[in-house]
Length: 348
Image (cartoon, rainbow, N blue to C red):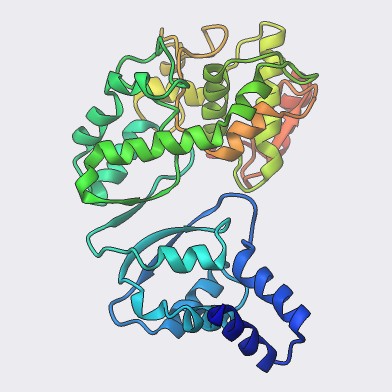
């Protein structure tokens, strides 16, 4: 009660009426900036002043008010308890939750960020570059068959024996505790995939829509993995339109013709396949093999997954990205060929 009274008194001194003050307090202290998850790396240096910490939180869009932060930490006497170290905060955390999290940092933890649409082998390179573990150690942890007994969304019969859980190692920013090792990191990635691919989303994909048939978790992940390798991330609508092309082609038994799937088989991200490589006899060559590739070709992010769960209904059958980075969508071969001549193709 004394703490609440002190809070109200401090707010009143700032010129607020009691009722408005309580509303202001609840809004700034107990209401997150966003209802959606968005991870934000954060670091506190040894000896850093609470006022600077509050300013950094405000600059990163994690809190609404440095005044509220200062008041809350003074009243709760939490500022002296802040720990130097690295943190992963989230825009769906309230100011109060953030202040609590900042009291539990350790200097030996490390931050790692996996870009959306990276294959497992590229994620392993990031792990090694960050000196968290060797690439081989991470890959060994990521292919352990024991994970399948813990996570029901993992495929019972993976299409890729070398990377059975490719597509499910969710790309995000993670805070790594060295004691947890590579298994701790892989567990965090799988846990986060389960959060994004919630029970509600799983129920949704089992129901067909006007734009797509009923799907499985595995098929959505495969489609989303291609979208994140092919779509222009700068334009959000491109992801949905690219996935609509895949659904439209699958519907009429037209080959997908996605060069990113062939590049996956070739073990690289770039450059584009050569004329000889386009003839490679691989189930990942979606120019010569009908339907979806046998497994995901990257670990897709939330935007790509949701774009394939809720694609727009279109008649598009073709797309290409021009030299300016703009993606064009076409319904027929003639318009596709004409626009390629007009705008050129990225990388050519």
